[in-house]
Length: 137
Image (tube, rainbow, N blue to C red; front, side, top):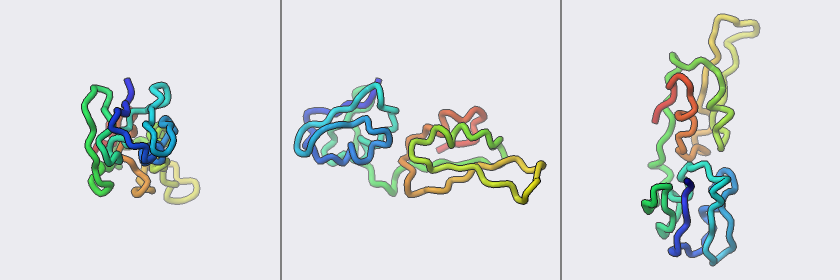
């Protein structure tokens, strides 16, 4: 299931501008819609909606959340295996694998780093796809 925009939508376009995958369409001052096939259920549409016009996949209305309150990933660098699954799945390209400490360093496991904190939407996809649980929120 995907998020849904309700009749409370005023067509402000904030949700469409913030959707990382372009799943929201609509024109200014008209009700928008979410393409369920494109929606990755990140929840950013509900966090930014000023009118509470978004329902989560369970049908519960979302509340606006200020960006400062959005959850951020906590990376356990000791557990990280550097597989880059999280990097490949992050819709906002917030994560990257650090370079080795020096050229030819074969004893250092590549480490994940959170390099674009301001771009993070707190979707938690990185933690969901991490095969070893090295990312939490």
